[in-house]
Image 1 (cartoon, rainbow, N blue to C red):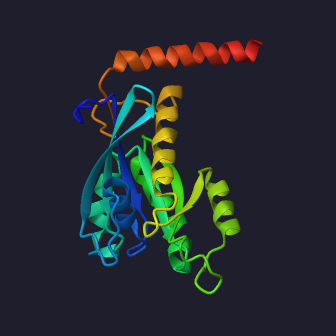
Image 2 (cartoon, rainbow, N blue to C red; image 1 turned 120 degrees about the vertical axis):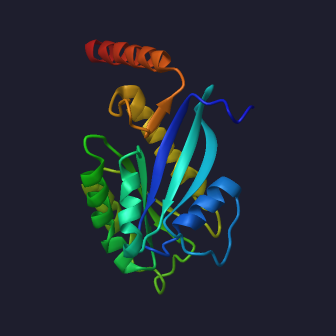
Length: 217
C-alpha cells in the first residue's frame, strides 16, 4: 500500500519525565528496535507510523517525542496545542516519575484549551516486574488512571510486551472520539487532519442513527 495514502492524521505527544523510556517505546513501535543505551531527547523528536484502525481506514500517526527535562519545557509546551493524543509515560521502577504524571496531565490540559487531548497512561519497564525493582503497583496505577478517566497499560520496550497494543489503544481511542464527535476538526488546528471531511460527516451521521435506534429499541 502506498504510504502516502491515509484517511486521517493524528498528532500524538509523548509525555513524562526524562529517562522513563518514551523514545525507547517509540523506537520499538515504529522500527521494532531496542537499544540498551539511547541519547536523551533534546527538545522534540519526530516519528511517523501508519496503521489501520479498521478495514480500509488508514491512519498516519505523527509522534512528537518531548524532552522530559525542565530546561526544555518552554519548547515542548508549544507542541501541546496541536496534539490530539497524549501518551503519559512513567517508569514502574521510579516512584517520582509516577508522582509527576498528574502534573504532566494538568499542564497539557491547561495549554490545549479550547481543544482536547485524549490520553492513555503507560507504565513502562514491565520487564522489571519483581518486588525488589518495582516501585509502583498495578493497583495504584489503575486507580490513578480511573481518577483521570483514561485507560492504563503496562509495557516494555525491551521485550516488546504490550508496546504495539499501547499505541494502537491510543489511536483507536482518538478514532472513536473523532467518529462520535468527542474530538472535532477546527480550522488552523493540526491535531487531526482528515483527507475526506465529507466522509467523516457521513460516518458521524450513520453512528448517530445507530445510537438513536439502540436507545429506542
